[in-house]
Image 1: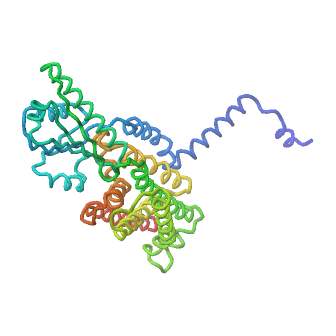
Image 2 (image 1 turned 180 degrees about the vertical axis):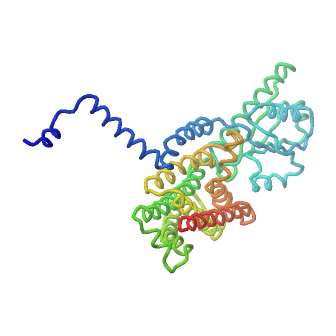
Length: 385
């Protein structure tokens, strides 16, 4: 047996095994640290998850904006309004001057509940021992509506008990609860718009980002970008198939929502489609942006799935009211396209409002689309250089 064969077959010492082990560990650390996007996901994602679940995952409703219509203006109505204000549940947004403002206030989406006192409230309570309060809540979100009306009813009942202790007279204040837009409290009325926003965003962003990341991994993206076609057309050509597939998904969701779940389209079907097409374009642009900053399909998948799904579910108002969250999380929520789309879909589908009520949402989504496309195109040009 030759010397070389003997040296290759000899048993390695513990020190040599340890050195080999350390070398392999160093190699693995090198590969991990080399991929900055993977490092970002590994180290930053747990922190973001803790913050999101710690602050946003809260079923308690706080700081709900309310309006009050008080034609009586007596000491009892003022005391009740003060009782509602001195807790964390409600924030008095405005005092209404006429019954006509009640409908306008709800349609504008300014408040979650309106409290309407009857005329001569204190006189009715003093002479007849009975007076009525009407609690009007936005039933498009049945969970929140049920919670805030329960809070208000309990506060009114507490004030009624205080009156009984002071005057020894059996006063009775009867709250009349009325849920607008969804009197039957059907959960699908709130569920469907949120699911529409999440599904469209995830499918468009995920599939587009993964498709372009695949080209990068295979080494064909640079070839496409140096082709005679402009980079903008190359990028958009990757998104067009998913745009049409998303339209099919949109109509499928609407058909199931209307004919299976019984959620009506109370407003304009035309403007609902226009809004949804704009949102699809924004979602595709977001996928293009993700693909411009990652180099692997795995990174694109993680960012578009985990990095978008949790913020959409927790910060867009889909499951939990954004008013409950800290201000910095509310600001982050304002940057999520799904938040604006879900709010606009509720206004059209559930509340039956026209295009005038969603102009703000349309403007925000348009700005997002232009900004995302511009940033994505710029990043691809930089890579080409």
